[in-house]
Length: 128
Image 1: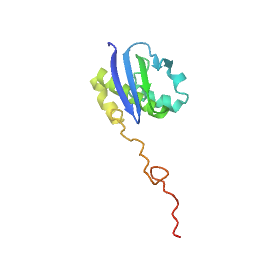
Image 2: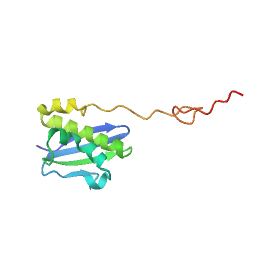
Image 3: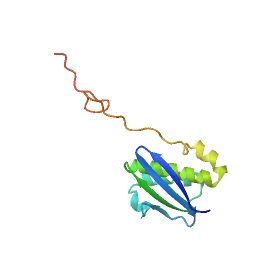
Image 4: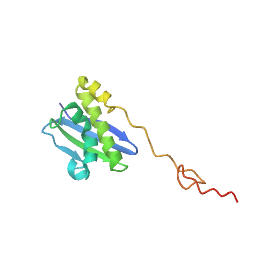
């Protein structure tokens, strides 16, 4: 499998993922996955497509991720990795789709409105 480029997005984060056959190296912004994501939960989110398809350790993965926070970045990596595995083997499409890994999560932060302290919070109402 030659090296290919895949894009994944979540919130305001964008992940560009390069995948090729290899020994299981997983680099995020030139750091090991364990060093980049401090919590196990974020590592699990990022590697979920590999766990679901049982392909752990078969690919070398290099990711460049920008924007957002660590939750959005791990979700963006998950989306890009699912797209890459779907492109690699068509038979994995059903498994990835049944776990909702191929659908981009389109939830975004709601904008703040004027006359309010936050997006939905209101100032205290005073009748008199």
